[in-house]
Image (cartoon, rainbow, N blue to C red; front, top):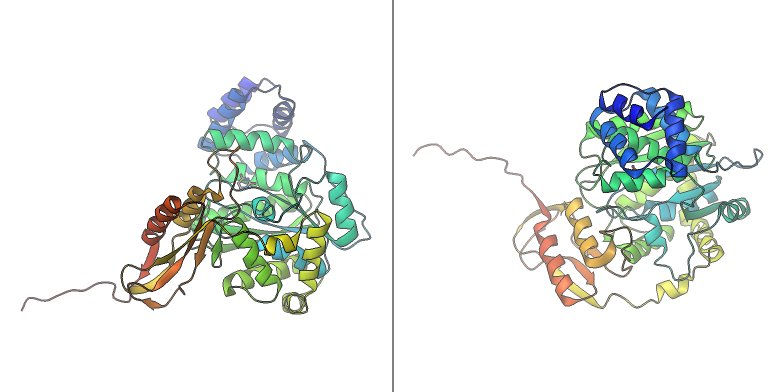
Length: 426
Ligand code: URA
């Protein structure tokens, strides 16, 4: 197979045989396919899409481009959850130990912040000393020992995705359902999972902006995972407003600790319970009502929190240093400047504001500031007046705080009971 022929056939809207895609992925992995050729093929895929069999072949080849973990078949089921990314989405932090303490093995491989969305690894790294760069051997040992590990993608786990993802990012070809499916599943299936729960986000703060796009991605993910031997289920969840009250790395760890201690904002807590319970059901351990009861009990009795502490310690982190850390240099109270029915804040605008504060990245090599972020004080659904508290900006400087405050105030979504008014002539 010549790469130029593969590019030309996708340019002309034709489907490639599985063997050609496998050869292309091998070339991407060993560097024999040039960046400009891979980029041209990615753009052709973006414009013409992939057939179902191409998506299956691409996912398989990308999964097999590195190591694929295998587990003792006599141990508990091996399961994971993946979110397609959002703003304030800190669910994995409490969910991974909760699912593990409830009877699963959870080898969770997560990502960093991407665009306006946050990343689990950046949140975890706000805990001083915590290592997310475990080798695959260390990951396997920790999961065999305590049931859970939360780490980043290593060089030998789906390396083809690393290279293709960087090229998609640099060529504006990320938001396309088929390559997203291959990218997500190649990494997750390399974990050697028995089952997987997919949280497909929809709304302004998600990559999928409409319900149709989200269900198309959800169905594709479930079908491709199933054909590759992993029982998967997908839930579509709201990302038009941020999840919970905290957005920003350390602040989101604070909220996760609240959840692990049995509290936390109701939306974050409910989604954590629901997704953890779905993982138990997907793994075939029990039905949904039993799974929900087990997970609630494991938050209430502190077992999930204890396992989170063990995991942090095992990965070199110091939770007490985190809880007594220096806060961000500036805390700026932000108030409403008009009255009305407060609905929430637009998720994309909040994600962008926190990114500009230094909580996310504009370039891959940017360092994130773990301390900055946004803390919502107002309750969605309440009627507010000028001067009522909207929230608190945590920033590194007064200037960046003021800039964020202005963006956040204009990100408020107002609800209206009065949709329209028609006046008759006197
Ligand atoms: N997350 C991934 O891992 N890959 C994508 O393409 C999009 C979101």
